[in-house]
Length: 120
Image (cartoon, rainbow, N blue to C red):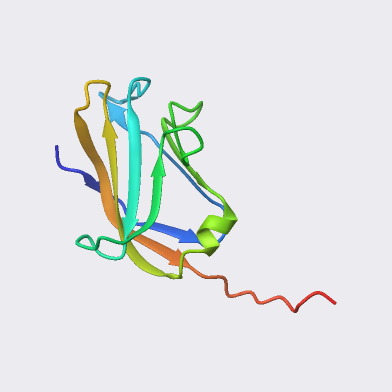
C-alpha cells in the first residue's frame, strides 16, 4: 500500500487535526489498530523532531466520535519545535502487527508573527 500525500501546516501553539481513513466510503474501524506519526528534518535523518503514538497520552486518538484519527499536541511541545519545514510519516498497524503507511508529506511549523510586549 502506497501512502497518500498530505502536507501539514501547524502553528507553534496547540495543534489539532482530525482525519478519516476510509474503507469503501465509510470511516474504517480502527479499534484493533495502533498509530505512530514521526516528524524528522529530512526522510533520511535519524533525528526525530516530534513523535506521536496512539498509546496512552501519546497525542493520537483512534476511533474518535467525529474522526477516526485525531492528533492533539499541546502548545509547549509545539513551541519547542523550531519554525521550519520538516517531513513526516503516519503509519497504522493492525492487531496482527501488519503495518499500513497511511500518509506522508511536509510538516511545516510556522512561528507567530504577533509579538506582545512583556507584562509589567
